[in-house]
Every structure is written in structure tokens, then in C-alpha cells.
Length: 492
Image 1: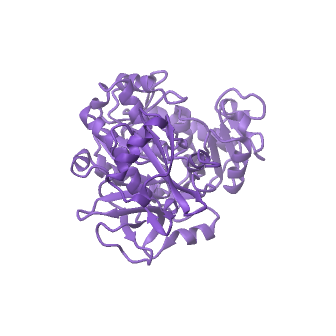
Image 2: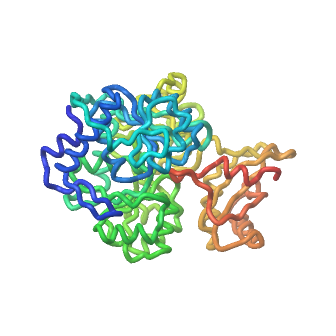
Image 3: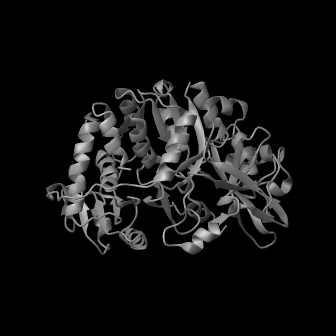
């Protein structure tokens, strides 16, 4: 099968494929196809062949979209790398991923200095890179793809250790796009505003999905997330959907809650969406869809519709088609409804394994599928409830404490907007419960939060050590940065 853009441009050449929110330029599928053909020729001239690995070190921008499709046109594997990494981190991932060619931009060129291979820049290069636009295209044979071929190798965020390199096949990406469409719906007029980093699945998925759907991807202005600018761009370009992490949704509501009700959906993932934030979105008329997913499943695993969250606030809804979710006890048995265990996923969206890492692959898979490392349960109606990471479990004085349960109680306090609970070393009990909270309070207000918790939790579950911060530290993909959180308690 030819690459998806080739097929889409043949089917609907005059339809709009992409809008550059910064310039306002509208690009048809035929025009995008022509640009991608030229870019693929330039990559070929730089020595990229079918089966090679091309890394992209860039922020979300229209040129990133073109690269995604040009790499597929050549038949190479896309390796998106976090644009915020240091030169040493970039070189490490590029080496592990066997990258043959690296494409950067002006803001990331310095981070390529330790990469031992050719570098090309999307912008006017500063020193080490070739100017990609100035390369004369070379002839190449357009690739054909099978469902089982690896299309993308993507590094996980690595919040609990070093990042792993996830392989995603053509079949994984296609199944994810189909399953998402059957949960969110697709209309010919859809315009997906893309503001998440394209080096994470939340930002990359709309690029693939829009081509399969024949709809529009509106590419946000590059740079740090600016809620006022995002609202202007969504309004100006008639966006109908957006992918966000919870802090972005909160910032948008704080800036102006009159634009978001015009969206058909706001898909929120990357971290747990606080119940209070979901309630606030409902009150503002926003069609919010809390979601649970990961890189290893090509994005969504389960997603709650607005009606689902009204009936079962805090759940992430039922699994999407192609995602079979099991909850396993410590003994490896399937847990009954309501009983927590590890969330295990199988199905067409699940990665075949980690790149060049058979040990990690073997450790991650079992008879029921991929072990997510997340604790959760399914209720009587099949809805999924995500609690916390399994390795976040706290044992204090011989008692097991589920951090997710404590977080849920803390978030119910009227002055707490978000919370994170963890165990810190304790000479007497082995571990003690600690909490980081955000909201309109300071350390002096913690007593009221603790009293609130004591009315709802057993004494051994009550946090003994507290930190109050403006915002929970997070990675670029929106997940809580656990190492940064633990750093708040150094010496505590």
C-alpha cells in the first residue's frame, strides 16, 4: 500500500489538508502532496533510503507535518525526538535508535552537536547543519507499506526511569485512528487544532489521523503554549477539536471560556484530569473527553464521553475498539469488577515491542498483553478507573496505601486544584505518606486540608509531609515529573 498522503491526495485533491495558524496559509491535499514529493526527493539526495531512520528534532510546525509524510514516501522510519533535550540526550537516543539522518530547526541545532551523522535544518543553518531547502531533490522510488512494518520509533517520556524506544507499525497507527474516530466521531468539516508537541503521540496522532479522515489539521504557532493565542487561533480557523493536557485546559478556561464551547470535542490526556476541572469544563459548556493512553498503544486506550463523566466522574470511560483491557491481581488473575490491579492492554493498537530491546519487550508482555505499569479497576459497567503507577504504591508501617485514593480525597477539598501523593523514606515506618498540592492556599492552610482528609481516610493514609506549589511539575507530554516531585522532598 502506498503512503497515506498519496492515497488521500488522489481521493480528495482539492480539500484542505492543513492550515498554518501563524501565517493563515491554507494548503490543499494536492499541494501538500507536491511539497512532500519534493521534500522526499531532498531527503533521498541526502542519502535517506527505505528502511533508514530519520530523526526530527523540532517543535510543532507545518514543516514537521511535511516531514512525517515525506519520510513515509521514502519508506524510512520516523524517529521524533523531544526538542527540549540536551545535546547529550539527543545523541544517546539517536544512537540507540540507529538514526541515519537528523533534521532540526534553528532553535534545536545546537542540540545536534554530539550526533555522529548528517544533520539538515528546516531553517537557515547556523553551523553544523545542511540547509534542507537548498538541497536539489534526487529521484527515488516511492515506498509501499505493509501493516506490520515499523512506521515510527518514539521515545517514552521516561518519568520513572530511562526512556524506551517504542515501535509503532502502520497497523498500529491505522487501528488507533479508526478506534478514535468511532469514539469522538468524524465530520467532513472537522478541523483538529494541533498544539501539543509532535514529538509525542498526542501531537503526532492528529497528523496521521487527519490524512486518513480527509479532514484538516490546524497547526498552532510554534513555541510555548500561550492560551490567549491558542484561543484566537482556534476561533480564527474554526477549529472543531483539540488535544490537550489538563493544565492546558485549565489555562484556556482561565483565559476565556467563551471559545471552547464551539469545539465538538476537547480530548484531554497525558495525565489524570482532575474531577473539579471536568466539572468546570461542563459548566462552561465544553465537550471534554478525559482520556487514558500511552505511546505503546499509539495514543488512546479508553476515552470518556461527556455523558460518561456526568454519570461516573473520575473514570476514563470504556476501552476503545481494538483495545482489550484486563485488570490483573498480583497473582496474575483477572480481578473482579471494582477490585484494583494492574491495567493490561492487548489489541491492534499495541506496539509489537521496543526497538532493539528484547529484554524490555519480554518484560512488558504477558499472556494477557502489554503490562502498562498502571494500577486501576473496571466497574460493573466496564468503565476504566486509573489510580496511579504501580511503583507509586506506598507501604507505611506494614500498611499498603493507594496514592490514587488519597489524591482523590485531596482533590475534593475546595481549595485544592490538583495533588500528587508519594512515599518518602521514614526511619520508623519505612515510608511515610507525603503530598504535593496546588491551589489558592499556602503552607498555613494545610491543616484544613489534613482535617478534611482525616474525615475521609484511615489515619495511616493521611499525608505526614506536605508541599504547596503553584503547579505540579510535568514533562513535555503532560505527565507528572516524578523525579522533580521527589526532589521537593530531598532531606525531608
